[in-house]
Image (tube, rainbow, N blue to C red; front, side, top):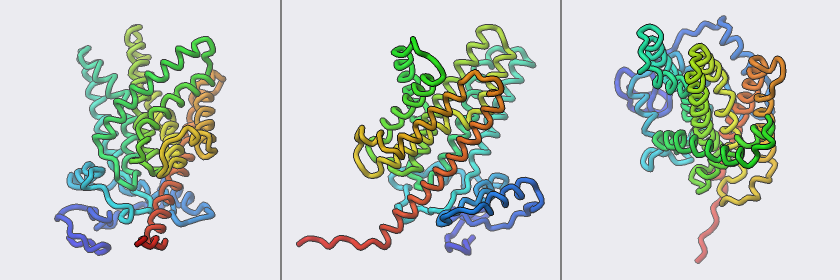
Amino acid sequence: MKCPHCVHLNPEGIKLCLNCGHHFQDTNQDPNSLFYEFAHYVDMMPLKERSVEPKFHNIFSRVFRKHSELEADRLFIVGTAITTPKIEEVKETWPKPWLFARVFLIALIAFIGMYIGVSVFRNINFLPGLIIIGAFAVPFTTLIFFWEMNAPQNIAFYRIIYMVLIGGILSMLVALVFFNLLRHIINPITIGMVEELAKVITVIWIVRDRKYKYILNGLLVGAAVGAGFAAFETAGYALRSLLTGDVLNLYSTILWRSILAPGGHVAWAALTGAAFCKVQGDNNFELSLLRKPAFFLVFILVVAMHALWDTPLKGMSPFGHIILMASSWIIVFLMLRIGLKEIANKKWRIAYEPTQPTQP
């Protein structure tokens, strides 16, 4: 099947071009649906600069389409020395992720199976799996979304697993060190400061060698560390509920922390990771980078949102948490747009800036 857009030869039976992503068959979308009405409204919102246009309904347009195993396989081979594209080959348009929805569906089916094993067959051997899958399902799904949105495609999937596991546990251990030092002044502000500082220290440790220098890389690395932190924390709270014999609280803990997970640790760590990569760029790491407003203001904003999240104010849960989650993702999409514009600017400089003459 030859793609009419890029003339790439594709295997028979696939729906999307493996090179440019062109859809070979038109889908019948109901223009009167609430989703597309809302998406159209978002697309019509005025923006000062339209070089990288965020088409809201286009971002999720491939979620409900059929995809072959070959398309999924192609996603998992990116990021190696052979498969990482040159910056000139990277598309600066908004990616169209879809794999994250399949990952969530698989995790949901697995969790339901574990739930049946516990509640119907009364087999406690299913409890560890139920806690692990319940804790990791939504954070990992959100991470896959960030991975698909990483337009440079320069981070291999096995590196993502490393960042989730090692980055997640390392950030928790760093947080425990800070909590031990500040054990006499524990409050929502210090909790937010300690946990966000622990995560950003871990992110900086991962990206310090400048291999992951793009803003979109910072979003992905931060999301990986935040996903590990969130999943391990949820598993700990669920285990506490189980040890007290309160099974209903176990399910409630997993449910609510899963619903709110995308707007918590994952999004916050992604934002600080993106902010740090923005100020570091192609430079070596220096402590002075942390004082730059582009990073420092984002970090303070994230700490403030975390502190508000933990504040025991009446009405904060769940409506306040939902508002904070929505606010976090507004900033995430703004950072995604900045990251895509960064790719476009780098491509422009490579293509049009004059090269320096070689000295004899």
